Length: 379
Image (cartoon, rainbow, N blue to C red; front, side, top):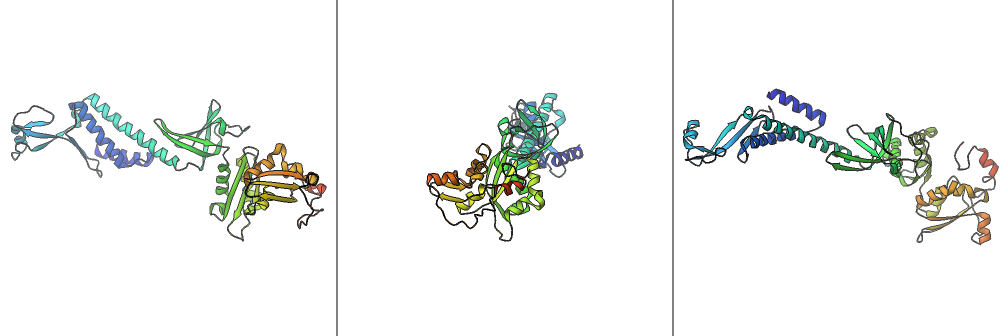
């Protein structure tokens, strides 16, 4: 029996990741509960378990008295001395209780105590495992729709992808593998409740960390992210090593790294720009792929006036204002974009030298002959 119990505990420890000490404690509590159910109380019950062999003994500690008034807690001097002649009044005698003496109900209750403890520990282990993954990405398998929400199996637990955290227009097919961002893990009586997201900007950051070695190692930092899930994301990156190009590291050879992330996000477009401490340069970079003539940034007011070539105005603003909106979120500045003509008419633009301004470089026909669409992406 002890060998079978030891084997069972070892299996539970390996498969459920529940420590043997916890299981032995559950057995001890179950024996105490069984004594309480059998004798009516268990204040004087003591359980001794050998953790190496799983051999256990259950004792009732009884006080030696002249006249017995409580059979559970007392023993007569005559009966005590039959066990050992050395016993005297007031001594404590340990009487072993055989588990075989327990009735069916007491045995069933003891079994329930052990099972309940195993369930509690299993839930605790699972909660701890996924609680450590909070604010990180995990891979799961889509199970089914629960109303408008989606149930995703993460291995040992199920997560819920609510409608508000789903990418608009994205469909979820059962058995399909998907990466999600763990928003929150709560402990409940039915096990951990895991809330995940596909729309959180940190999902993109974690994907870059998993795909780009330089980001994972801290050589390249993702300074800022702005995202409109399912459509477009802008990220600003910075390199702590002057020999490492942050944008190139994130894009990868022939775009392999960024394309892997785009595929995971099911075609979501990603702009990668260089971070700069100078807000004017940062804003200029953030408005990419549009070309900028000038930027006047007010660091105190967090506002910026941007002038772009006339033919670049729609590109700078983007479809339904998306490019300007994402650039504003990325930089933290409120950006006012005007074309060169509008700026001159408003008196906001003055002629000055621009080393990077080149008529040939900004030639409209040449720009679009390169094969870019109206949003600045390769067709």
